[in-house]
Image (cartoon, rainbow, N blue to C red; front, side):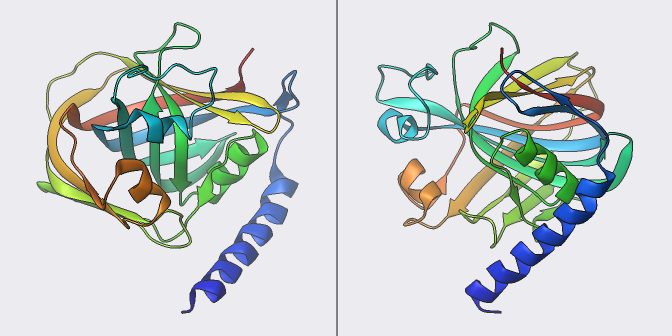
Length: 255
C-alpha cells in the first residue's frame, strides 16, 4: 500500500472512530485551561523501560525552556523509551489489550512529585479511545493500529511502530521478568500543548522490576534518528522489563 493511501485510510479510521467515540463519551471535567481531564485504568501489564543518552542540544529542540533537563548544562542528557502492553479501561469502557510506546527526555520534577519525570516527545498507541482522549486533553498522541508487541512469556521482546506512526522504530532484545516486588512507582510524563501544560501521572501500586538488554532502531534521517544521532541506540543508564497487575493514569492540565 502506498504511503499516501495508508495515511488516508488511517485518517478515515481515526475520523470515524472520533464520531463514534464522541457520541458515547460521558461528561468530563474541564480544567481552567479548557482541557479535558480523565483517568485510565491499566491491568495485566508488561512494560519495557530503556534510558540512554542523547545530545542535550538535540533534546532541547523538543523541550520547552520552562522544563529543566536532567543533563542541563552537560553535553548529553537522558532519554527514556517506554513500551507497554496492558488491558485498558477508560470511563468504564473496557477496550481490551492495548499497546503504548512513548519517548521523552528526563526532566527535573516540575511539581516535586513522582519517582521519575519526563517530557513527552513522541507518544503512540493502538487504542483509539486512548488516543482520542489524550488529544482532547491536549496531548499529541498518535493512533497507530499497526503497532506490533511480541512477547509471550518468553525471553525476548520485539516492538515495532510502523507507518502511520512517525517516526517509525523497532525495539528488540532479551528480557527477564522478576518475581520479586519492588513496591510502588509513580511516573509523570509532561507535554506543553496548545492550551497549556498537560501532566500524565501513572501510579503503579505494586511493580515487579526485571532486566532487559535491548536496542532501538530507526531511520537515520528521521526525527528520532536526528534526535539520537544515528540509526541505533542502546540503553546504558537503565534497562528494565517490568510487570504489574494494575495501574492508574491521571491526565490533567497542570495547575
